Length: 379
Image (cartoon, rainbow, N blue to C red; front, side, top):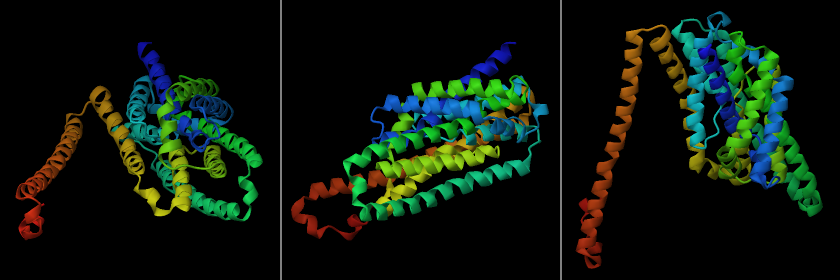
């Protein structure tokens, strides 16, 4: 009984973090473009949208998460706790850094880690999901770029679009598309928190989507401030027409995948759409922003991170294997050691550079033109 209660607590905590990450990001466009000026109102709109999407259309993806990647026969309360715990830890770390992270990636990574530990994974379904992960964000990027170019041309020809009387129409449009994107997030993301519970027979699909949707909405409203700030303000500034295009594009792609029961990285789709619009507006300069580099790193590391955590927990607590645990521990220590060595390798360079600056300051300005070549190349 205690472990079952723990499973529900972790699932609901995970649902709140899903709301703080993916669901909150859906209204980042409306907030960043100025259609919704108050961040709290934007979060409330996303919360309502994600709840309705979960209740109305979240069932198909719940089936995939619950039994489409690994057999439901191996799912029990202990396995559910491991899957949800590993995913929740990965997502919580991302939320604390303010990075919008794909909850689908960390959840699928955790499920695959359990499957690898028991040597039973539906590889065909997994490969299909991974292909969708790769293709849909790329499609979103290029479509957003093309839409951005079309918007630029349209705004040049139709100057009246920038008149004040039309701004109200565009504000309504971007809010509606943002709400639709939040709705699509509910359809796709609620499964990540309640899918394992449904697969283990602890919840029905209907009660799972309702409970999960409720807590995802609470997470978006209460914990989504950092992520909506990142997506809305730190990547690129969008006008109202661009914002509605990005939100509408993301919503259509995610709803389409959800109808087929495919968990897709909605946050990646939204962010890639924003970058595509930014590329059409500002050119290659958009790629030099450090926040995009940070996003890419987290996207690559997170599913692997959650996979390793869930695999290790299975081997430690359920199917103890000293060899496997030792290998994981060694890889972990080797990674930390490599990072430490890389940091130390950079320090001598800075010290030599500092020494050159000290020498130059000592010899003074009158000898600057006669600075030996060896000093100029010292660093």
